[in-house]
Image 1: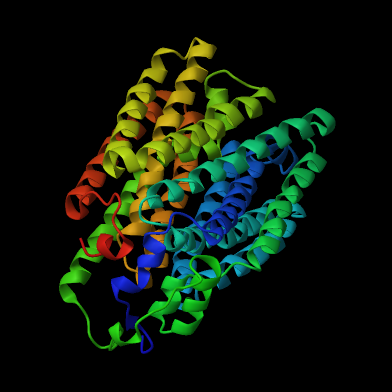
Image 2 (image 1 turned 180 degrees about the vertical axis):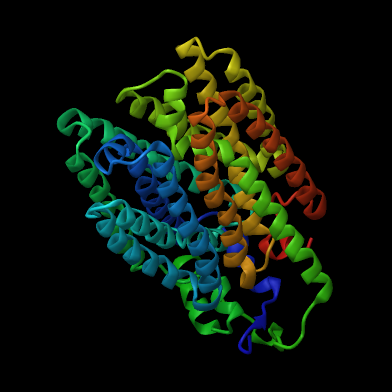
Length: 452
């Protein structure tokens, strides 16, 4: 890129060492509303699963195919938007993806047949796929080094909160409308409310100073930092260097690709079971003999509320005990209780408690993978790296939902709660490799983290 420059670490000290700023709190709000909109749009569809299967005359496996379509769209979106975010800026991506989300959700709500439902579900995923790389990049690049891991983890609190509200909304609409087509339409159309609010909030969001500096837009970056963080901020222009586009650091390239693959695969394996619980929870609960509208309430608590609790724990411990230890503790507890679920299937209260604990603990692992993807790559790669990590998360939800629905359709409940936990073990091994390659990134600047 002809206009890229090498930004000296000293130019970013003001951001790295800040205690907090109005811009940072604004970034948190920007990320929160996008994350909420993301999971609300996803989970509201699952909350309407019975109405969809009944009124579109499809099977549970066909329903899982529409969940897979969403994930495919989100995978494509994560990659495309990741590149868009790095080339055209975080702010533009944040605004455009919400506009697309609103349009496609409306189309989905008024789908009249399975084909239209499938296509619009894919398009909603395509739009939503952009929020991960843009929002997390922006939050990362405004975060001080001492709080960065915890602040990035906040995304995983707001994300399931959207799902929690969607489940409660689905339950309330069932009580008044039953499993009708109208229930489905109303539940889905409410999904445009969060992105509309988010669009209003994001129209005033500042661009990332780090991205602007890397693109050589020094005056704009200085003005944003002065207005939002430090009114006395200044930069020594003599410390900047041109970065010729034809120069490539081969050694660095050999490290970047393996790291991106390790993180993406770890995200995929970690989220297979948790993602399938979000995508086809009603089908999973049916396999345990738990049926009826109360499954919406069970899902709200044992899945989404559990995810929020796990991410909250991560927020408080990640800077104290480190990234890898946080992930390791979550993985170990999750695997133990996942496998143990098969021993309590005849005891509903114990079953729900075990599912709750597994989902709390696994969401101590999942946020750490997101933190790694946002920290260990430089500014010009951050959107892409987060996008590819999001590919792992999005793809696992669709693939996990489809595989789980297929296994349960032939009564293979045991396979679900033995194979997936084994894959979590593989994921933590991959996480350990990342840790060994990059070390502990606690309290390191983004400049230091990308060069460790």
